Amino acid sequence: TQLLEQSPQFLSIQEGENLTVYCNSSSVFSSLQWYRQEPGEGPVLLVTVVTGGEVKKLKRLTFQFGDARKDSSLHITAAQPGDTGLYLCAALSGYSTLTFGKGTMLLVSP
Amino acid sequence: NAGVTQTPKFRVLKTGQSMTLLCAQDMNHEYMYWYRQDPGMGLRLIHYSVGEGTTAKGEVPDGYNVSRLKKQNFLLGLESAAPSQTSVYFCASTFDRDNQPQHFGDGTRLSIL
Image (cartoon, helix red, strand yellow):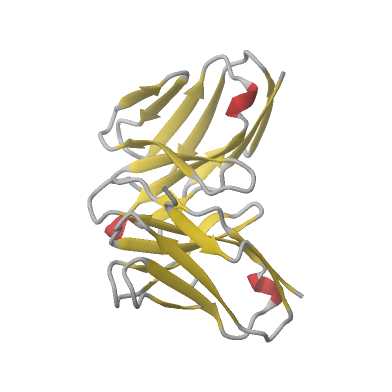
């Protein structure tokens, strides 16, 4: 089982600030997904990264996959209160099973 | 457009009682999964199924059993509930192709007293 280390565990910022969340492992990922979870709901997929060095953008969110495919990051520009939630990275394995990191809880205050 | 539906949403059990959590998906997904989510632990895979009539163990399978008698349904059973099984349980499903998103239900909050 791949161990995924996410940092920071908790982040509290003001609206308009930028932030970066990290997901690291000692193992190589075949591919990695980022999910966002709101209270009382299940996680929802944000992005899948597959190729080393890949950068994907989703509005104000930028996802990077490390060249060695052992790490990934999520950068949010000009955070908004609607970005509040638990951000989870997850490594894909056989039969599309997921191994999740422990998550980063983001709180964006107006 | 229901997606993944979990029942019940909440349940309180006494130690030693049994119960079954039901997951139903209407997306014709081949693969289905059960996870548990505990504070500070992220989501951990309990069991999964790659098709009707098949099941496999995940990371934390002890104390749980599963069945997939119909493609659209995946049942999670607790034969003799223990306080350590207090958790939020999530079901998910996806297509049998690479790098597809898993679609999650809204969870079942289970407390064992």
